[in-house]
Length: 240
Ligand code: MN
Image (tube, rainbow, N blue to C red; front, side):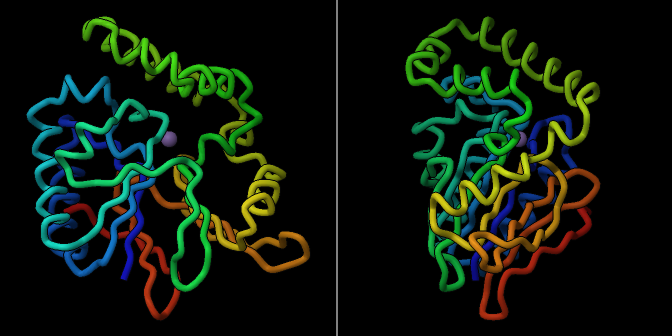
């Protein structure tokens, strides 16, 4: 059995979510061969060198799970794209590229965070291109910590303000972008998070039945997609 989750937005200010996640790691996740975390795992990440005691406790819990035999794969989101090798070593996770092709349930599946599918948001796409450039990342990682905190706060408040202002179709995925990327990677199943709109969208790609599974965010409840002999199934569960 494989589990996929995303958009937990873990932060010290939401102990209900981190408690539910730690509980998830000790129960359901121990039954899984692999756990995929598809981005925005942390609400904010300013660098592995600035890890807080709260974040370290999450890393240790992940490490315990990986030591017990569950493989853990982590993909960057737009909030935690500075998560790096040091964190992954400490947490026993493997960092995945976005997008990433994996075999799940006997088929090739494309995994993404999902922000790169929201191409109608031109300002964000431009910022994303800059933020994911290796040179920018090098500069960002070497800025003084106080500057990185300031930047992170600015990015978060801008992203919140823009989310409120922008038309909802702009912050959702661009419909044409989905078949384009699925054709490019030759898949019939795409799984992503980011939009906080959990669903299974049935579509046709190149005249064939295909699906886009959107992972739910952890807020008033948790969400996990389970892949096993009976297929792909996502269900919410209470946090407490
Ligand atoms: Mn996101």
